[in-house]
Amino acid sequence: MIEAVDPEKNLIKFKVIEGDLMKEYKSFAFTIQVTPKHGGSGSIVHWHLDYEKNSEEVAHPETLVQLCIEMSKEIDEHLLTEA
Image 1 (cartoon, helix red, strand yellow):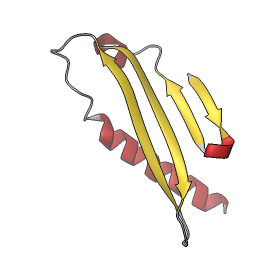
Image 2 (cartoon, rainbow, N blue to C red):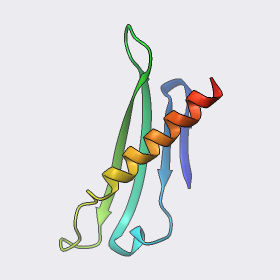
Image 3 (cartoon, rainbow, N blue to C red):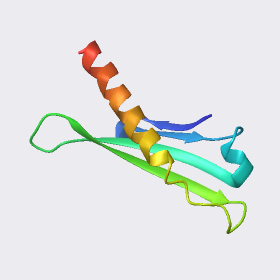
């Protein structure tokens, strides 16, 4: 679910409300913010994962880092084809 959009800050926040992640986490949200590079072309993408585990036995979600990388690449490809 899209929780917030701030065009001025190039920020989007998504909140996970169902699915596999919710089996291990009480709450889970992704925030994506894009910042233009100073003095050059392109931008920097920052991902922030905010979560609360159901228990201490639940692992931190390092496996989602690769998902964030792949999504960033796909967004980049999409934006470049529209330019």
